[in-house]
Image 1 (cartoon, helix red, strand yellow):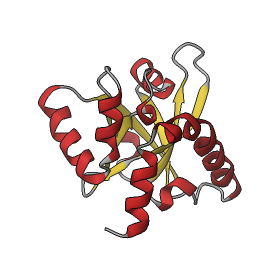
Image 2 (cartoon, one colour):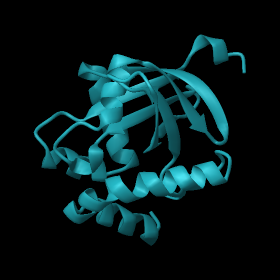
Image 3 (cartoon, one colour):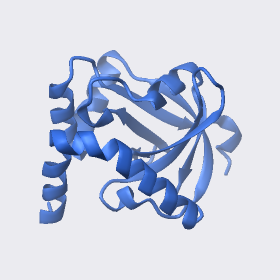
Length: 163
């Protein structure tokens, strides 16, 4: 593993990062994503990323959230982790997906309709094992909080399968 990746993993596991990152990283990602017409996410230089557009749980208004993801090779699906950088509460976007599972992701400059499903039981455990191999800091985030970190699988909705 390259030294830069190890350094980013170490920094991203700190409490200081957890305090600052939720305010800085998404704002930078949204700005760069908008300026590049959906082709670039700064955070995706280290981890793959999507911009999730989901309806607000209470408002019903579209909410755009840049997120790290783990594409599942060959399956055309993505795993999203509601780690909230190891902070105590679930991130708002997870509640939005629970209330309104039909959403959209911007992936490599393309908008794709998806359906989100919260993983549980053995399916979640298997996904969590793969996610920890993919990005080890998730273990630090989980150890920091009492809640179980939510893991979602996003699947292309049928109207986009042929594309």
